[in-house]
Image (cartoon, rainbow, N blue to C red):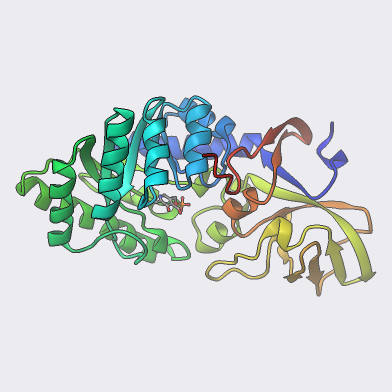
Length: 363
Ligand SMILES: Cc1ncc(COP(=O)(O)O)c(C=O)c1O
């Protein structure tokens, strides 16, 4: 089947671009001799997680419990759950996975550590723990050294847990120019390495220093002491990474195929992909709600749920024509579709489920 025969809106992943993106990040890890543990929240697809392993990843990072389960049940042997666990149910589900895969968990509270310890004992597994450090994003994670040492002490005393290291995510590197990225990414690495030193001195050896986002990965990988990077959106790239200068349009592997559903004037085109296909995330310095592949200056001006409206330009298209839209934020778009089409050279190679999308709450 040809790509342009597909019903729309359809989520497309260009296999050639995907593989180039995987290779480029694998090279970053290789050059700096750090481990690569990509975040699967971007693709939510075991097929792509396995490709990442083939390109040198040591395992995956997940945010949701569904991602953790889908990855482990589909044979990914090493899963890092980088989201605070604060109640019994999630702790039990992670401990259960500890019977099937190597499971490590991020923690930033004593409450979370105690739940994990109890769950690990019930399932008779040992769970690796990484303390989450806030290096400037001001989301979850601790920043006070005394608080971090106190948590390390608690984890060290809890049965079923093994304190393995520290992790951080410099999400504030998104939307920065090169100078901003350099500053944030170097600080990201330096802050965690210094905290690791303080922990070592306090008698808690730190083996793993895990950092990274897509914009900070190349820089933080070169900070001495960093052992692992965890980029996510690099697999696809998107309009917001292009706006920040981290990627080019040609490196964007994920697009939404859409049909021109209406063309009421020569300078207004309505696509059948709106907020329910493209989302409404924008990101710093991003104009509009998606760019037309091949004519990227043409942006979707505004969206309704099933309408993407392009105003103020003549695209040379007519009703029924199909275009590919490069979304602003690939990760949220992936989560909107049940399946994606793997495409290459204008041909459809496969229809693959977005297996970990949404929140299913398997108990
Ligand atoms: C904890 C954590 N690690 C890694 C990532 C990957 O970052 P990016 O999507 O910028 O590649 C994220 C993204 O949200 C994250 O929350």
